[in-house]
Every structure is written in C-alpha cells, then in structure tokens.
Length: 185
Image (tube, rainbow, N blue to C red):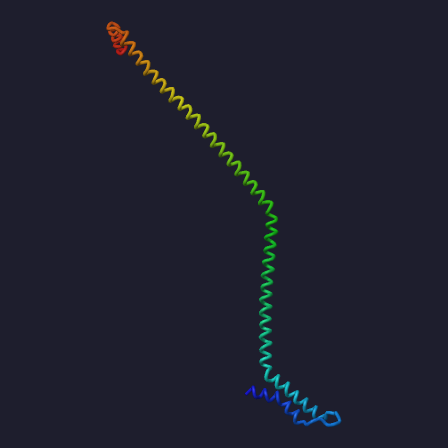
C-alpha cells in the first residue's frame, strides 16, 4: 500500500503538468501553471518527508549512535594508550636512572664472587698441601718402621747364626744362668 501511494505521489506532478496543456504562443507561462507546479512540488516534498522521515531519522540516529560509540571507544583507547605511554616512559626513565647502579652492583657482586672463589681455591690448595705433607710423613715413618723391622729381623737372624756357630755348650750354660738370674730380678 505504501508503495502504491509513493508511486502516485511521484507520478502526480507529471499528470498535472500534462493536464495543464501546451504552451501559449507568447512564451509566457500562466501564473496558474506556476501555482499548480508549486503546489505539486510542495505536495511531493511533503509526501517524501512524510513517508521517509522515520527511516531518515532512524538512519541518522543510528549513524549518530555509531559515531558516538566509536568516539567513546576511540577516547577510551586514547586514554589507555596515553597511560601506557606514560608508564613506558616512566619505566625507561627508571631504567636509565638505575642502569649505573645496577652495573655497580653487578661489578661488586662479580668481585665478591672472584674473591670468594680465590679464597676457596687457596683453602683447597692448603688442604691438599697439608694432606700431601702428612701422607709423605706417614710414608716415611712406615718405611722407617719397615726398615727397623727388617733390620731387627736381619740382626736376630745374624745373631742366631753367629750364636749357633760360635757358641759352645759352656757358653750356652753361662747364658742360660744369666738369663735365669735376670728373669728372677
């Protein structure tokens, strides 16, 4: 129904113009024709406005809402970007300020570690040296003990051989008497 009414409104001026007749020979357009055309034009604009005003209003209201929403999103995004920019700027400034301090701390820490490692190395080398000296002393003492034991065994063996060859029965009786006397004491 709305479509038919729109077509009538659009075609009505053409029908009115055609009904007005042709031109009069003098080239002058009668006032009544201009009046009818003005009325038809007014009716046409009124009909266009009447039938399309809701659509136009809703279209522009939607566009306005979309623009306002986009503007709010843009403003929010800008605020966030500005906050992030300020935050990054502050972090960079803080990083620049603490760079020298961090370098000094790192150097101090490295020197402390170096000193600690050197102290530990010195302690380990002293311990190794002491252990080596102790081991050498123990080995010398063990060797001396073995030599003494071997020397005593060799001496006893040599004395036994000498005693068995050179010692007679009278000497043996004398030694036994001395032994008994010494044992008794």
